[in-house]
Amino acid sequence: MINMASSQLNENIDRGQWTGRIGFILAAAGSAIGLGNIWRFPYSVAEGGGGLFVIIYLFFVLVIGLPVLLAELSLGRASQRNPVGAFKAMIPGKFWPYVGGLGVLTGGGILAFYSVIAGWTLGYLGKSVSGTLSQAVDGESSGQIFSSFVADPTWPVILSGIFLLITFFVVRGGVAKGIERATTLLMPALFVLLLALAVRALTLPNGMEGLIYLFTPDWSKLSLNVVMGALGQALFSLSLGMGAMITYGSYASKKENLWKSGIFIATADTGIALLAGLIIFPTLFFASADPQAGPGLVFVVLPTIFNQMPFGSVVAMAFFSLLGIAALTSTVSLLEVVVSYFVDEKGWSRHTASITIAGACFLLAIPSALAFGASPQLSGGDDSILPFGLDFLSLNNNIWGNYSLSIGAFLICVGVAWFWGIPKFLSALEDGHSQIFPMPGRQIVGLLVKIICPLAVLTVLIFIIATGNYF
Ligand code: PFF
Image (cartoon, rainbow, N blue to C red; front, side, top):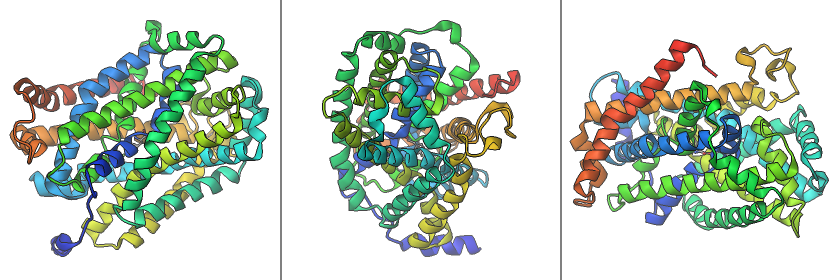
């Protein structure tokens, strides 16, 4: 009863809408493009056998990412609700709102470690301003600067708090013209800068070796972990499996052509990840840094290339500012998922919801911020109390960023295809745009969402569980 009353009460709340087509597409692309492309993708490639990982990742983007993206956007726009409300409104049955609930929980789980890495970008911005980064002349010196920065017990915590505070201010402002305007200006700037860095990286001595590494599969590395990692990365990078695209779709008007928007978002996101690879790997071979450097890879490798460029410190400042902004447009979407749930379903004010959740995520972020030396118990070494030899951040990254998103994507496909129904899904996707699909396109998308995606995700998960190769 209470729930019904509160959702009726909120029926008339002005939830906000994107002001225009560009605003919607860029906000969604802004959610997708972030640390996942520039921080997580390169080190996942390094851990997953170079080109081998890239091939599996691209396959998953096409066969699973794009269909799930279309499913989420359609569910969101048709229901005009947060993930829990969207399932409640469109799919009968008590079970389905819990799928939205898992998404809301995952949003908080990801935000709690993502904000730590986002805080590192602020720290590196500070280092490029103060000149400390100019001492990072090769893999070794750069590695030392990084290790001492992340092992500090205070700065990483403070910086993740600052990042969450900025995220709070943006989200509190609503589906703001602010985000739209900022993304419209800054995403193209990020792209141009990345392109320039890629040209520089590829022309470094040994640059081509990096290119070869990125595109040559090392089949001996093929394992379930690599497949799982590539699946998780495809979903993580496109912000899928937890309802971020349901939420962003819910602010989209009938005028949007979701099919075109989906293709644009997926292409831009994948293009930026590959571009990041074209920068990192040539530089890595040039700087003789360790390709297995894990979460520190980007922070260790990139400063060495900046020091090889004219006006390197200016480029470093520009790069870390833009990386911070790319991260911000993603943290905003993570927080927005959780906030929209509390606003729509629980009747909280946007202000209360955003400050409470950002605050809770800050507390949850602290152990991740201490997981690189400040607390040996959380750092995955000999004194660690954590399983699988992983540090606290990487463990969370795997649990929320791979497993939870995969389970979420599986359930979203099953809900949309088998319980909402493919005909309703396709007409919601095409709403206001008659016959945007040529005929085989419709059938292919239907088949992917109904059979191929759920089956593929389930197969990977079953194999992982059966063989116990969790991480
Ligand atoms: N897609 C973002 C990135 O690549 O950095 C991360 C992310 C944002 C994941 C929002 C999930 C999400 F809902």
